[in-house]
Image (cartoon, rainbow, N blue to C red; front, side, top):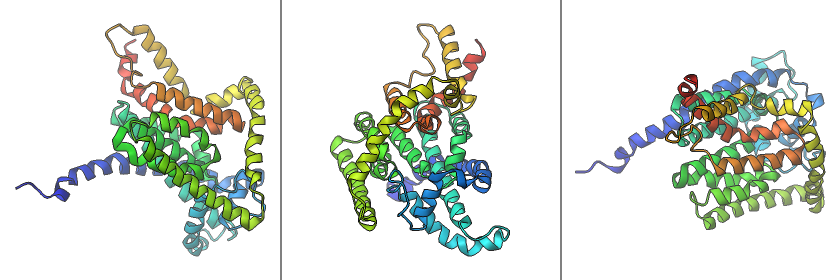
Length: 355
């Protein structure tokens, strides 16, 4: 007789746990170490963004910039985590005044967990691109050493959720129909993670069409947009703010384009771009150049599995960089594609060593 369905699926569940749980735990461990000094020593007096999200987590929205006001998911999660943390924090760290320390610690915990989930997406997407497991893990850890990962995990910010949305979307495109759950999550969470998710939507719809049919994509997107409209309505009603305020704020970002272009071509801007992934940035173009030198007509290139999806994602990231003016922070959104490229370099490093 055939074995029962639950027993038959047990190996699949164990394999899925290895593919997701182990990279996630490794990413959590790396981020917890990397981001802890940032959480403890950061000077919040110089960061209005972090003060805004701390206020939101404490339930105060009256003085919050419209740019941040509706990104409620991470602050809400931090508020939930902070409740039990506050009961124990003073006993563990009696030298720190009560104040906002428990809430800062809650943001640190939430952001480490969420950004680690993004890292697990990068790992699994790199595996789908053809990278070896060890190479994909190494590339994931390399990308997590970026200073922007330290900021996103250690500070009261919401970048971790937006990075997770990008990671889910890229993994879904790489995985195909079996990654439809990731695409659904990206479309539902995206609108509440950042307003500029609008620029990622066309990429998801086009490159995700083989993963999930457009009607189902649009239904999931409608759910995310509906949730965002409800949040806008609740907050605007509470504050008595006009609904057009959000539109005006969004249009103001277009004034950053000229500034971003000028900054990108300046020595400081070029240094900021190169520092997004640190010295690991140089490995991919160097490997590409070495590959060109030794390539024959019969041999496949190490980057053969990369293509229009990665190029399109870089265009989306470039739009974010131009509108934000914060080149490095927004450039880190390219982490999923860069992780795959770096993992492929690590997978085929012997080929370059023979050059």
